[in-house]
Image (cartoon, rainbow, N blue to C red; front, side):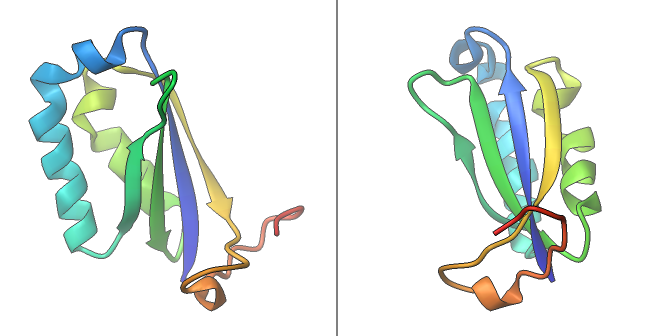
Length: 105
């Protein structure tokens, strides 16, 4: 089991433009959390131009699949997104992190 970070780089005026899709996005995120895939997620502030979602899974595919099916992505609120393995070295469940990309932690 490892972790992956999903970064969303969002459109200008994201906070205002997300309103019609927010409930669908949150339901999508809650379902992933209930399945044990999504550990944490939220938008960065000041400015609200990026979001970060942390996934647990055996591969980054879980995060990629989430992004491909997210209403924010499907409706053009995300300009680009990327998934990167995340080596957790300190904190709760750090021992569960088995990501093996070079240069981490």
